[in-house]
Image 1 (cartoon, one colour):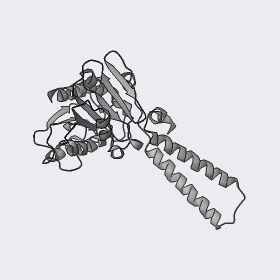
Image 2 (image 1 turned 180 degrees about the horizontal axis):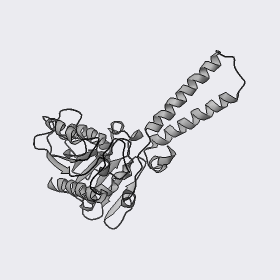
Image 3 (image 1 turned 90 degrees about the vertical axis):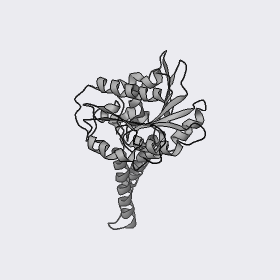
Image 4 (image 1 turned 120 degrees about the vertical axis):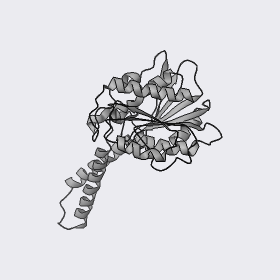
Length: 286
């Protein structure tokens, strides 16, 4: 867990609460272990065994939930400059253009267990083109635990006319649900769905009424080309598909290699430029 300390420090507060829980359980176990000896089979021994099992489960859960920490160039993209103001809070990252803003913004759900900062570089061009970008920090790095984050952004940015809802991997799956639920909202509706190496969990081809762009990579080992192809009937017939030749799953962010992914055959810079350009073009088309 400590090897991903940057991802924990910049994560949703749920990570900190969980770490405090681990420390509390560990200290309690040590204190009980230092107390007087108990007879084998006694109730206190059973209690200590149960505590040890609970502690192991909690530690194991957090080991599994260890975030993929953002790396360069995402960290550099987190700095404000004359073009974009970057604001980071405990629950979200916002990239706002300093010039005249377009009324359409992007709400982007990170992939599972990925540091929200990891998408700063690939999404910064969207902000530079005049569109506010909001990236939620998901509790425990799971998009399904951040289902209310879009509503929070809609409330906090009343000046935004409408939102493109997007996401990477599992974040895109949740984004599909959010876009489908808000495409007919009276105010600040979803105006589009942007998928990064992702696809919906079910068939929304007959209910989603806004444009969709799906960007995927031929070297993706997780959202494989076969899975993207198989999911096409679940999306509207006019969905636009952009394929990054040689692109991998992890190249949709900047957080290092990912287990289960394939080796890309293009550079990170090349993949990021193609993904960013497609995303900007999609928002500009709405």
